[in-house]
Length: 79
Image (cartoon, rainbow, N blue to C red):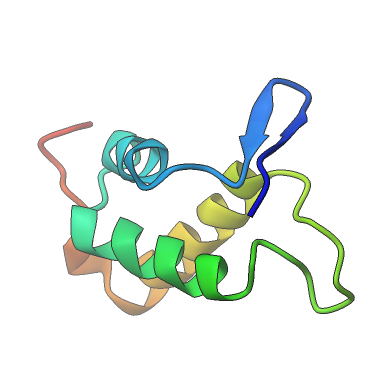
């Protein structure tokens, strides 16, 4: 898949980029990997076939959903 640059945001992100972002938000690497694999299988596209504009916005929504269901995953030592 070809990488696209949009407003200094590289799409699709690399797994390390996703892990760093999730770590900064207090989330474990395993959750970052779940997110990455889920969207990588979807080729970083929406239901309509358009590329995601901001993977970080999508990741933040993912994290909020996870924290709602599994608040114990949040690493309080980071914040």
